[in-house]
Length: 368
Image (cartoon, rainbow, N blue to C red):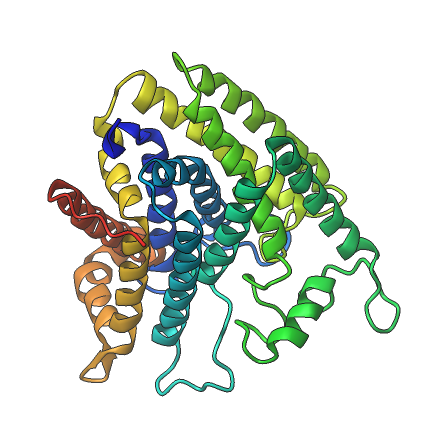
């Protein structure tokens, strides 16, 4: 069976949806005018934006059984591939941090964590778990990680005797990250992609692994119902757990991991039914193209946005000039600043989707 025939289009489209969401919420026309659902929750709680990164990790996990099986059949060295992919992802994340930092970069405060860095670490952990543990042991590990993370944040005391605090500057995860990274974080108090909160993010990806296996053995669309049932159960469980351990993306609380994995499973089930079972491919083609070149789409789009923001013409950044002339000048009277800012982001996503569609047409796939 060829690699192309072994691909699952619904998984590509789901990953593409996550990438499109990441581009959309990361590149508004102006950060001064953003609709609340398109921004992260300030601390506890969630918005649709908070679902985007967990969906991407879930999709990454779901693809692991498929991609690793292909490499085994192609007699490629899986361990060396995992190490190389981890290193390259982490390095690209540092490059993005460099591009996004002020010029010249201040290396004494240069941010070390980031989105791609977390993906790299989680991928290495997922690869290790799936290659060295039984499926039952993997499920036990995920449960243990989520429960122990909850227990650690709730019961391990911080200096001064306080415990169970979940404020931005006073919680166990932030405390460890502050001492580990020092000034090399997104904010002085915490980093949303800190090292400690990567543990429950690993659990999110592992739940994606379980979903990927369900897709692998799907016959006549039976995975639709398995994924729907699991998704509804996890979503409800996450909401209930959130009453005692708040849903929080910055800390990637256990309730957040369970809730977002449930939501991801439901949407993946919908995509599987629409694309794989009903063979309705047209709506998913742009998303599938984004999903096939997910890393390229994310890295290039976010990197270009940072460059456009920093590059100036006549004292004004290129991005602000394009936004003002191409969007705000005629949309602001009818749609307001937020509407114009959203329109810019939607067009930016559409441009990159078109680029990825053309790359797919030319059979250009960038992978590591």
